[in-house]
Length: 168
Ligand SMILES: [Zn+2]
Image 1: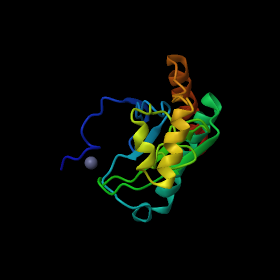
Image 2 (image 1 turned 30 degrees about the vertical axis):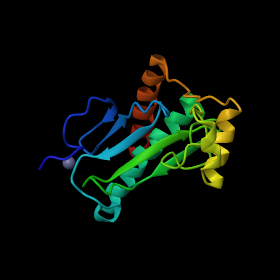
Image 3 (image 1 turned 135 degrees about the horizontal axis):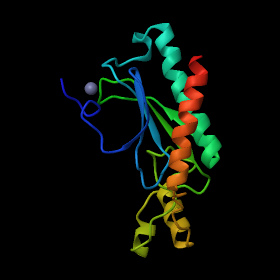
């Protein structure tokens, strides 16, 4: 069976063993956004053995710690949804107070970073969206907290170190 997570990824793999892999998603708004993906086709955490649940979360926490060490975000968001793939996987999303969606979910409504092109839109949108447009017209720009190559290499090194420590 082929699925979106079984086909080879063009994204950089930060860590991999026979159980899971950590993929850097190259999200332009969230440069250090990683996904921890189970290699096997198991959909729910509670279908893993207790030991493998711990193993999965140890890697998730290894990634969280590495991201905190390397880029010091204001907050880490962890999410496991996976409605479209048969692999348990965890999203590890570093958040900054000036990122595109803060304080909303990164899948939620953007709060900054888009140029207002039509002033008339202000009068047609809902209260929440009005805030968005007013913030944009005030001149706030997207801050993508760009990730340097050195930081990517440091993430790799720290994830491996943290994951190995967690499993020892
Ligand atoms: Zn698959």
